[in-house]
Image 1 (tube, helix red, strand yellow):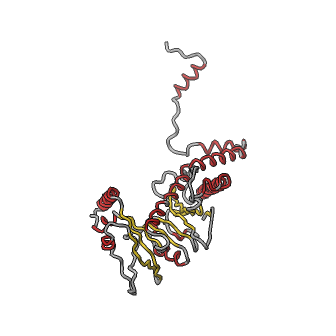
Image 2: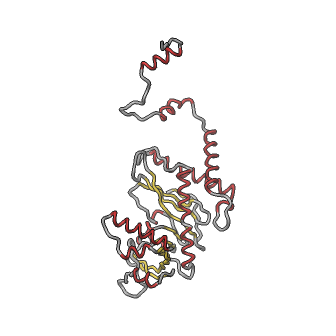
Image 3: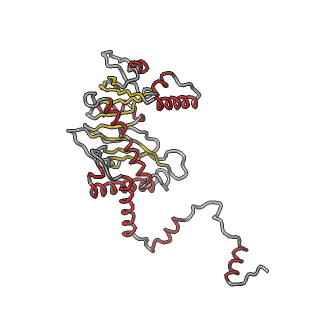
Length: 338
């Protein structure tokens, strides 16, 4: 775990956007490492990053979330076993709900609960946005929640249904009527009461989740965290990934100190883009490190060796011996084509 800018205030709500990304070792076509990233939505600062292997999936259990934290997460976090404990200790979630992955229940007194019929619930909305009270259950816990349902515009809904049909065909199946109906809607589950944030506000809040995607893009495009040149589970791989996170922490801290709220808050108009800011500061750090730690002549052989090709059966191409002889003779003025 790599803690960066932890901000905890139990007297207010702290909106934390969470997402994951992947890193591959050289030559790999599948995931080698996963980055579990959390940013503070107000400051857009990295709050926490965890590095795991490909065997560890996305989960809220990776993060040190406490009372007052509101986690904004995508479909990959439809997991009652990690959602319920967070809500139970005073945290909250805003989650892109997937009815196929997580079961929610009607608000009723039935001991075993009544599963929600989403087809009927969506029909009852008559194409209008609405809030549906639900229970989120895990083991003996029953948590009050709300699903905010919003219809997609006609063009987007049609496109979503086409994609659903294609995914079903790829698996040799036919998309169900329920799947096609739900494809035309955005469903967001939250443990925050409707009186605090209504459907319109929840929809606007969830759109801001895109900011974590931009942070991950900066980590990869500007700081090259995904250009891993070491094998899985090696000390060099561990050093590289955590070294890049240290690079990100220093870059972020310099940005905060140099530009303050002008670049690091979401509570007003921002005139400075994080992309240009990070790129400028990252280049300054690289230049400073190069100046402070010039290449030592004692290690020049090791430096050259690190730039060489790895051993392999086929050698790097070179000129034929006879061509080399002609070049040498030509340099001495002794080659004639006559």
